[in-house]
Length: 161
Image (cartoon, one colour):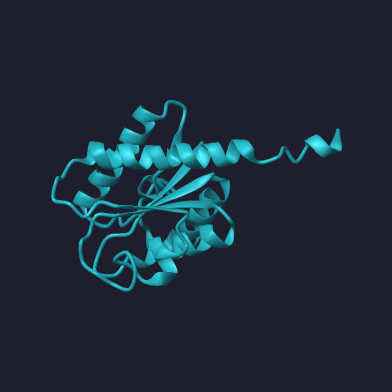
């Protein structure tokens, strides 16, 4: 299973938390591939404005290649890049697992309805328990649900045989 982790990645804290979530998913789901856009380098550089077009294309390509998108939807308003990635994945009919640990309120589930309604599954973790292992466990449970749905899909090559 290829998993694209859409999340803010602008601070050291955000990048470390993303890595912790990705590592937890890989540990709990051996064989899973977790795509972290924060790791994308273009011409051996991170975030070089001369290569923003290539960076954008790489993110879109990786969403296309992924089976599911896990989106961290925290903040008073969700990160704009993450919101785009959710919308793009939705348009491509990808499964989307939304995670919100932010207890601030908005229209629905603490989010703008365009985000909350795009999610195939939604994980609200509005507690103050600060335990990423429990969050990862919840994400893995939903990833397993996605995998079950994928396994039920008919094989498109079966009719050609």
